[in-house]
Amino acid sequence: MKPAPVLKPGEITRERVEAFSAARHEDAAMLARRLEALRVLKDTPPPNRWDETWRRVDLGALKMDALLAAIPTDGGMARSTLTAGALPPGVVFGAFADVARQQPALLDRYFMTEQVKLSDGWLAALHGVFVDSGAVLFVPAGVSVEEPVRVQTVLDGAARAGFNHTLIVLEKGARATFIEEFRSEGPAGSDPALVNNAVEIRVGEGAQLDYVNIQDWGRNVWNFTTERAHTHAHSTLHWVMGGIGARFTKSAIEADLLGEHGVALLSGVYFADQRQQFHYDTQQNHVAAHCKSDLLYKSALRDDARTVWRGNIRVFPGAQKTDGYQANRNLQLSARSRADSIPGLEIEADDVRCTHGATVGQIEAEPVFYLRSRGIPEREARRLVVEGFFAPVIERIPLAETRDRLIEEIGRKIALD
Image (cartoon, rainbow, N blue to C red; front, side, top):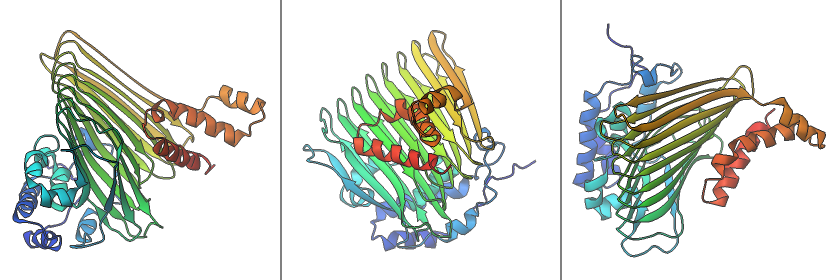
């Protein structure tokens, strides 16, 4: 029996891809990348319900063929704005399209060659066909970027698509902080929009990266992301994720620890309301020995919202002395909401410490009662309890402005009571 696809894509022709590239005045190398992605796309079946990571996904309202047909050749896409202070010599920080034109060798070396590959699935190949906005950060060996670099990617109310690519490469001993925010601007259009983003992170030997990714798309957006990081020997990655907006989100987030004594810390907060659906698939892959990974994802949900977190720690043969941990905590603010939490372990080494935990619960009456006894109204008391629930993760965001904005958005969702 042939598996039923989760989504039904339409036909994308070579002529359309050539027109898409020509409208951006791209060189032959970039067109060749797109056409190779198109070849892989045609040879790759779309996701189906036999795939465990898609079994709980409800895409009955998504008309993928119509969304793909609506992708414009020129204009009507997401746009990215980059901000940075003075950068040390040798650092490259630029818009994806600019780097593709000005430093094609950098893309030849790192763009969808190591972390996110065209062969990673139908969505990854589709991203390679239409990648349009985004940013590239390259930090050479031994260089520290002292001030955070920032990227804001905006989808205006009339835009129908966004294919944003984030490429971060830190060579040996480099240091940087990268803060990325995605949002819709103006009133959301009545027409649905498709976002299909990719994040590639390479943290070289002894390097240190703080990466923050905050998503606040409009409620007309179907949001899909493929995100993967590689850490090398004695490197440290701290990856913070925030999910607030979009009608639907499906994110594959993976950290591969490839060198001994590497560290990957993954923190996430997400708040779903109304009929939002958030699906996060996280993977911590311990390939090398003596590595540590620690994941803490926290969610709140209300109304008829649904969240699904599916996490896995995999320890490869020979990855002895692994220290792996994952936890997912969910706070239900309505009886109609639903949170699925599915942790998993795959261990192929015999000298490891791997643990996981997952909880789903409601606001406890005692802290609310305590706050009300101090004269705080019930709605404000509930807001403070929810903010306190998220605080351990939000405090890890290195930029106060981003922390405050995320707290404000969470407070706005709570105030809908």
